[in-house]
Image 1 (tube, rainbow over the protein chains, first blue to last red):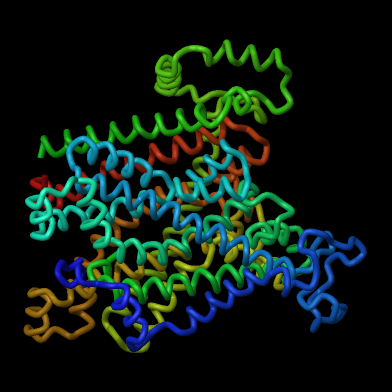
Image 2 (cartoon, rainbow over the protein chains, first blue to last red; image 1 turned 90 degrees about the vertical axis):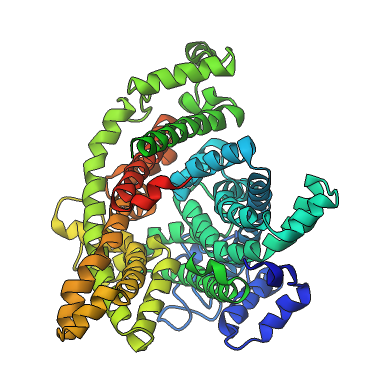
Length: 294
Length: 306
């Protein structure tokens, strides 16, 4: 990040960036829609997502032969309404996705700042751990942790945070290394600020941009990982309506050609991840030119 | 150079140590490991026996010493489900994983390199945009969903390809595509940027000044040099593919190490889960070490970095 300009970045500047040409309207609209659907899930969903009517198993979507208006997007293997499950699934993805990104972000940013600013053995310890954890394939590591602590929504957030903080720590540390050589930090030292104050008041505000950009880019990764974990049976426990879990259930009707059970949840995941990636890419270019190579 | 290798070797060993420590501590600090290491539904007496056998009443560092010494002897424990040593099980599945990874790699290079070159040669034209879109889709579509949709089309509707299992060349096609899809996008991005860099270099300018036809400049002078970073990345990615194939192998019931990991979860076979994760991490640490050395051989500047 570039010093004096970065230092002068205020909240107002960040928002004025939204008016810059090429703002990714479509991804933003998609993400906001998913967020709204997640918030108002209990108003929007026509049925209880966790209770099915066994007599109504494998009903196709309304527009297909055999479908009915009662279940617009059909029903699954125990007769649960697919539309309702998709709507509540948005809530699971949003809650897990955002909290995991925030948990990983806070952890990674704090450790990255400590590592970069304090240097010495603190830096060595944090960076060696970061390297090792980065060497583990994220999904495999997450599966291992999930197998150890057992599946629950809360545990998934902790696991994803534990797996992904390393990405933040690496980038943030690199930025702190150059920030701490800059004049405003030196002046703060001369003025007698404690290390804690410098890190909190002078370093932290300057790495926030990068943390936000990384967080947006990480959102997509985290949502896919959550879906994969749920798909494998170590994520969100059934009968909760998570999109990954719906895909796992959809496998049961796959060979019979019940496409809606597989295609629809996957489309939801794709829309959300694609939007997060597009938004993250745009933010990266706008807020932080140095991160372009990431 | 010697100093560099020694330093990198030390880093790799520290990483392996931290890796084993991470696995060891997570299992012990998040609950009673005996519950994980004993078969589900075991009696109280069995649990007590396991406690004594594993020495779980002893201090942590003694336990870690034991854990490490059995690891170094190649003893990763026994599978509850298969009743055989986990290491044998792992090694018997590895060839399948390597086969799948190799097929996925061939696919990803066949797609990634030509499209990357085209994107670089026609930079900022429509082909470049198509390439960017393709790369974005590759990075955004979950591989297991790609796999499921392919089964739906090619197995269920068209009946062209077998939906699961292994045994013939036809079985490899869909899993290799689902796994290679993401990497094809990554290889395309790298080929594009690498080509762009080479195309701007002095010797390419010279080749053009000599009056060589553009096709020859690209194929003979630029392409060869642009390929080096791509092939290095491909080498690393081959190992990564073996270790991220869990979902794809699960979708297609492909009998590799990823499927082994899934079975480990499904049958609550914890020694299998632990071993698979350890082996995967160790493999990547070792490959990273060799890549670091390779880079230093190619580019001497790296040796003198702090």
